[in-house]
Length: 113
Image 1 (cartoon, rainbow, N blue to C red):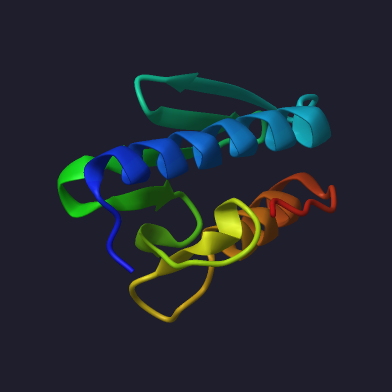
Image 2 (cartoon, helix red, strand yellow; image 1 turned 90 degrees about the horizontal axis):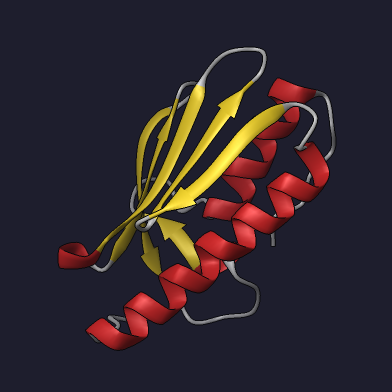
C-alpha cells in the first residue's frame, strides 16, 4: 500500500515516537536516544549507533544498523506501529529486526510493536 504524503508523515512520525518511547523506557540505562527532525539516533553504551529515519520521497523508513547494515521499510496495512513497516529485502518488520538487535546488544528482552 502506497501512502499519500500526509498519511506517510503521520504514520512515520507515529512510528518514530513509539520507538523512542519504548526503547528509552526499556533500555534507557544502556544507551542514549534522540529524535530530531525525523531522525531517531540510538547510541549504545557498548558501542554502535543505529539511525532510523523517514525517507519522504520514497515513502519509506530507513534503518542504518551497526549489526546488519542498511534496511529500507515499506508501509503495510496492519496492527501495531513498527510492525507495519516491512523490509524491502527479506520481509522482516522494523519492529522484529530492531528489537532483536537491541536485545542482543543490551541483554534486555525488548518488544517494539
